[in-house]
Image 1 (cartoon, helix red, strand yellow):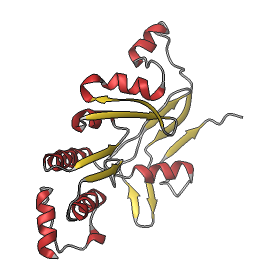
Image 2: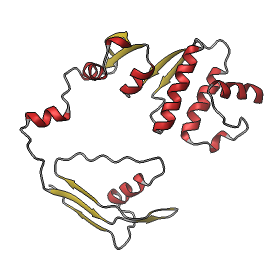
Image 3: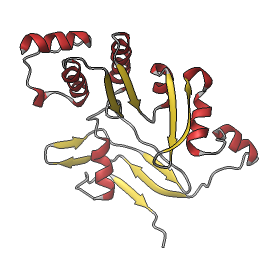
Image 4: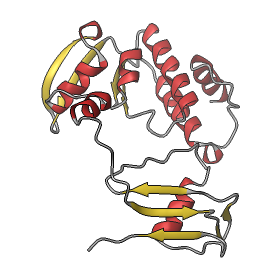
Length: 211
């Protein structure tokens, strides 16, 4: 079994120890272990991957795409389901677009598409860029009304804490996105805002509520 595992991991370019307990592996490594388990089967011809990079970091996703391309060169067909259009353009040979739970819009070789065309076919209408929308609105400025103000947010809860403080302003009508590397306290301080877990006394939060 160990020999077969080593062979499968080597086919994926993984240096992971074949004896390491799977339960202790990070999410990214688990994706590769799942693939290794499948390609260890005899006469594998088709591999269905449903949003395989959704939980991966950017570096892990890039490595995963390299693995997918390596498997296709070995003669394994890949059904790659994803909403990340850059990944579609990177690895697909044929692109099939579905919308509204299964309506077939178009299926054709990758060369017949651009990312913008794929997005438009998915939503069923032309998508304007942010720059074009701003120009059509005559450079109208967004609202200056502040609905959330955070100064020096620090959070402390059993087993976790957010150090250094966070300063943040959010304005009316604004969509504010937050991203981080896995384990970098994003969920901790969001939980502090909406569930009100204990925050340090020096933190200052002002929030405006609308009826």
